[in-house]
Length: 323
Image (tube, rainbow, N blue to C red; front, side):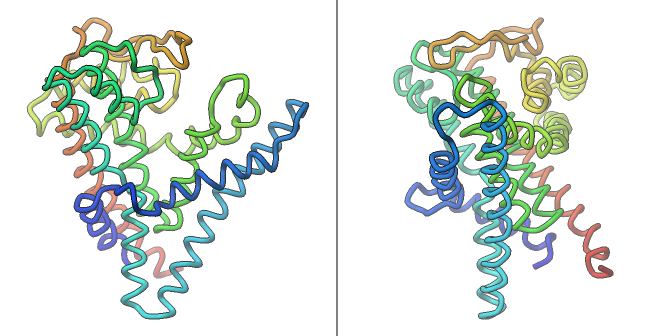
């Protein structure tokens, strides 16, 4: 199926269905594989080098098998019938995207803030962020929502679209494996510093271009949504490197400039305070109205990303044909 047809149909499927919790989502299967692979490969008293090698083996196995199994499944479906193959390709492409789920989860947090139910807002927020949420006030909850929707616009929407345009659903599924590995073992703490290093570095590489494409999409969407596109450009160029991640700070800094709010800074993780530099440090603290604006900007940015991915797929199609 051509990317210029697959991408918008998969995107519409995601908008219609989202990520129902009852559905056997491939990411959940990847998570199970990672957990079992870690239990198999890790041994007590491993050296740093052995942990590094074991983690690299797990990363290669999960990413490689995600690509290969997806390709084999699609080939088998197309052998049965073209209609079944097309449906399988659309279905698997849908599962690579998270635009609807991102919007719904953020909206649930904001609805709780509207109802002045901080306790429920913190509970809902904990579903989509890694930081501690139990003591956050409305401003900090709003900041967390803005940062999460900006970052997730890259790894949940832009990157899957980019890799689907570049190499079809199998490559997009391999990217989802990279992203899942990073979220589960790519931590710079004592437990995963060596075991998760390969996963973390691979995630940095895989998200390098999509993160910067997302920042540009946020800037473009800011103009469409009557936000400060010039401020988004300026703060992105100035503060994009201030995040501890080489990629997450790209769309987050653009969003800070678009909204004229201060993002970044320290957060608590498992009770430990982790300091970080602010982005848009001269601006005010964000509020719920800014978080709602961020959700609207991300929705527009996702459509811009879809358009760019469709154009990329169209541009690459003649090359594939000649190949």
